[in-house]
Length: 538
Ligand code: NOJ
Image 1 (tube, rainbow, N blue to C red):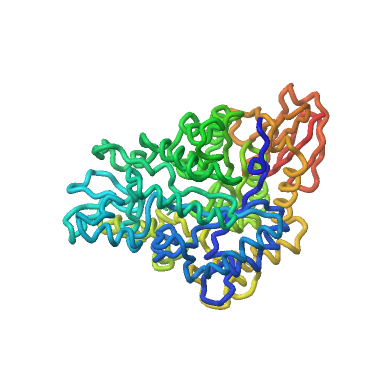
Image 2: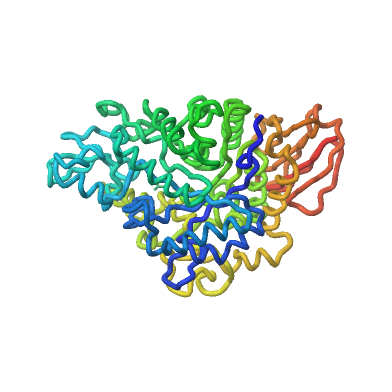
């Protein structure tokens, strides 16, 4: 298999508005990120993925862009961005930017022109129809919005304020490629391509049988033509890394995006776990891992992540954030860093930050949650019940400010934070983590070091030894005669695991574990709650 830097890399996602506020306006900013770069570097990170910081009315926290060539005031300015890039590179790290080109803001001059009249030259830059079909969007009951000025509907896959660009229009594509070159020529190291599977729309927009199953928004014929053109005209001319956000794909379809012979993208995020598995489901999780491994291995590259700015923090959603928070955070980290694919860390995950429950809908900001709340309440449902039903998966779970210390607002800002800080910041914060040698933070650091020293962790073949076990997940990674065994007890109680024949005769050396006193007991492992172990076998 071809070895590349981005297969070996560990990526750290910075949701800058919640990372560190340098000027007291309550929003994190690029200057704040610069001030914390040593923290990120010390963890061992190779690549930073920066969420969108372009000019934006901020209806969807930067995913509604009104000027691709400017930095939004809350984040800083272009001079600060250039300095950020320089400082990242100075520390031996790389920076990838979010690329949001399925849609713009409705305040983008292109859309303002497009909506101004039916024969405006930019009319065709967006998607206009006389009649809507029955599709829902990600954030609203209809994917179409009526525009009085011209008496037509425009199409939006997300919020009303995020009209979709018409990728069939060549001028649109050329403008986007030009903009991509602008950023790449500055020296950024790649893109995370937002909603990239949505670029192509089906001819004629036929009604869906079940409008609630929004798969129809994604993977429509033509999407690969656009990506191959983008590769040909832009991507292939730079030594960069690309990761596409590709919802609702099977490994077979996924391979079309990332196959090494396809000339499209390097890697993808599929969402079979984060979008489609609401709570921990061990057998299903194992099947997903196995299918994707078998589908991609040797042909294309996967990503590993269990949370990001759209998905509730992993220790809350897939672990135990109460009784076993530290053990559980470490177990999930072991999983993400030892399964095949490039691992992602979402800011705060490395100190075991948890999700949050606010008492009032007014304390939430997430447009997806707020729209859904309004839709359900309008149907006459009890508001309290609706709030409770939306809390676990609200995107604000992961968007609360980074917890730096136990001072007011967790040391995130001297002003009023744009989103409330999680009340547990006095116990869970970076200062505490750095002072405790057994913290989640130092465990991440060790995992990352292991990856740097052991190619087996990146390039080793994968074999699940525990397909039908409900609590224990045991698998091997193997490369050039080096064999590792990973055993995880994803459970609130003790479990015994008897090693299968093929590993029981080998001698084991414990490389890393999340409990300090591991006693080796022959071929039966007595695993404690959320215990994780990585062994080298000989
Ligand atoms: C996916 C992004 O991760 C999410 O935050 C955003 O709301 C949508 N795409 C729309 O851009």
